[in-house]
Length: 330
Image 1: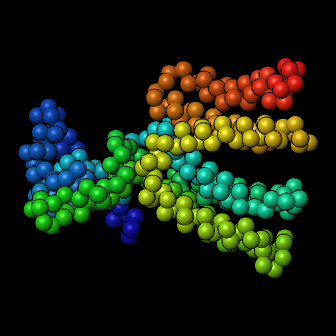
Image 2 (image 1 turned 180 degrees about the horizontal axis):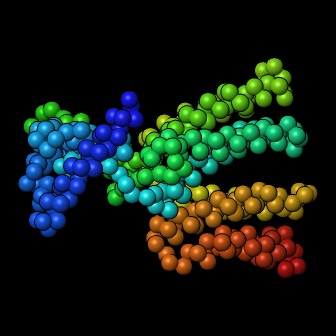
Image 3 (image 1 turned 45 degrees about the horizontal axis):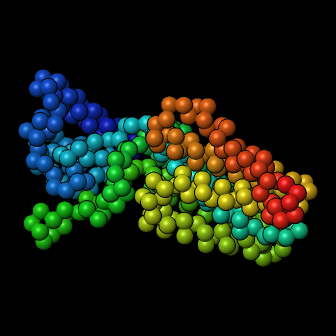
């Protein structure tokens, strides 16, 4: 029955859109046609949900919040049909990697870190992240497919529509808050929910079998990380959206310096895996910046640009070593 209702609603919207499009082609201006059919909704994010309504009923519909996966054109709520941009995809990837990195960082740091038990727990964390990503893709529009339709965004305020509810009579607010940036909020919340469930259903029992009856304490720290990530994403997601390439790039540069200055000469074997992870994260940040600024040469810039900092450090380290400068042996 739900499928029938969805099909009927989709058919109605398609028919209504076809009628409007035909009338718009005759008049030559769709926005002026909408202005003739409807009164403009107040505020920046209010619209009319006209699904399943005739034109006469749609004209009488009240303005309010658009449903998930829809965005207002100022008059009605239109379904989002844009493909996700590369920058948005990299942003969602960064959000998932933040959770994975936080989960891995809560694991014990001792001699046990190189044992089979720690390797199993690390692989489980990676597998949980992969399963959570697949589930989030399947549950976002269009549901059941490993693809995502995006509403796009144009300004920081799109992340916080609740702060822009209009007051047409200067007294009563018209609540039009909805996910304008769909699916940048929904995807991360679904990912965190599945990650939380998988930690409880998969990693916790395995930890109890591998370590002891109580399991490893890192599991419980992860269960605190996930709700904190949800709260942080809801409150600060808009700021992180614009700042994440710079944050990741700066963090990777600092980590590069730390690894090369403290671990490279002392540790055996060399921390190649750590440097490879830092390289991949820095490549993600570089690709996001090049995509955001629409740099056409990013196809050949992205692979080698993240390798410059470690290579530059290794090439100039002997000339900047304070002990060699003091001894005059440079």
